[in-house]
Length: 500
Image (cartoon, rainbow, N blue to C red; front, side, top):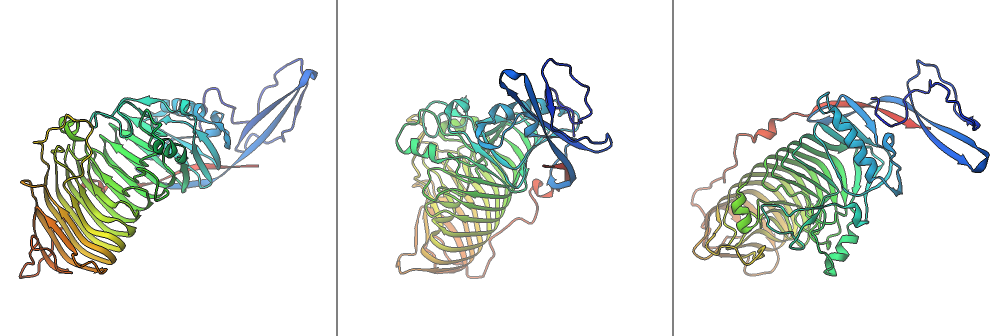
C-alpha cells in the first residue's frame, strides 16, 4: 500500500496530539509488526468538547490476482480519498481526487484504484495514463442524475454535431483522452448508468445536449476494458474512439430492449481492436463499428480497421448483432468476426450506409454464426438516410466490397436476406457459403437489388444476383492474425483488505 497526501495514515502507531478537549479512543492496540489499515470516524459531541475517534481496522488479506495488459506498482482504495459507498453520497470529488493523486505514479510503475463493495454514486470523472480502475465483486458505480455533475464537451470532429442535439455533449461517466495504458476491470463489479432518467428526457425531446455514454476513451492507445457488468447506459455503453490497441473482453452489458440508442460496444475510428467473450442485451446494435458521419467523417479521415470479434452472444430484437455503420465515412476495413450467437435479434452482421456517406466497407470476414429467432440473417442497407446536416455531398458514394460470410445456421427466421445496394453504386464482392436457414412461410426469402456476388451450398436458394457456384467453394477467412490477437495478458495482483 502507498502513502498518499491528505489521507489517513496507514499505521496506528501515532504521536499523541495535545488538545484541550477530551478524546476517547475506541481502538485496540496492535504490534508494529502487524500489517493493517486504519480509517477514522470523528464525532464532535456538542459543547462538551468531547471527541470520539472510532477506528475501523482493515486487515490485509491474501493477494488478489487479475489479468491485465499492465500491472501496477501502487494500490489505493476509493475510501482513502473520502469515498462513501452508501448509494446516496456523491463520490464525484472522491474519484477525481483519487485519480489526480494517483496520476503522480504514472512514471513509477503506475497505480491501481480499487472500488470496494458498496454503491458509489458519482458524476463523470476522467482517467489518467498507466492506471487501472478495479471494481470488486460487490461494488457498483452508480451514475448521478444531477446534470451539474456531468461536464460538457465539444462535438466529435468526425461527426460535426451531437447525436441527440446539434450542439455539445455530456462527458461520459468514465472518460479519458490522450492516454496510454489504461485498464478498467474487476471481479465483475457493476457500472449502472441509471439510463431511465436520460431516456425519458430523450423521448420528451428535452435534451439540449447529447446524452453521456458509460465509458468513452478517445485519442488513446493500449486500452483494456474487461470483466465487468454494465447496465442501463444513458446511450452507448462502451465507445473507444480515435484510439488503437484495444482489448474488450468478458463484459456483460444489459439494457431494456426498448431503450433508445443503448449500443453495447462501438469502436469508432479505431485500429487493432479485440472484442471477445461478451454477452449483450441491448435496445440497439450489440456492436457497431463506426468511423465518422458524412462530410465530417470524410474530412477527418480515420478508418476503423484490423478488428477481431469472437465469442459474442447478443439479444437485440430491433437491431443488429454487429453493425458496420451507418456512420462509416472514414472507412471500415479488415473486420473479422467468428463464433457468434444471436437470439431474438433483428439481424446478424448488417451493413448500413447511404448516399453522402462516402468512405468504404471492405474486407469483412464472418464465420460461425448460430442464430435463432431472427427477422433477417443477411441485411445490407444502402439508404439508411440520417445526415448531420443538409451539407452532405450527394456525389459521395460509399464503396462496399469484399463481404464474406460462411458457416451459418439459423432457425426460426422471417426473411433469409434483404440486400439493397445503391443504384449506380452496387455492393460488390459478396460471398456466402455453407449456410442453412430454417425460415417461416414468407415466399420471397431473398430480396436483392444493386448487389454482385456468389454463393455456395446455401439454403434456401439465394437471389439471382448471387448465383450458385457450380463447384463448392468456401468463402475466405484470413489465416493470419490481427496484431492485437498476439497480445498476452499478464497475471497481476494487489493486496485486498477486509473491514471489521
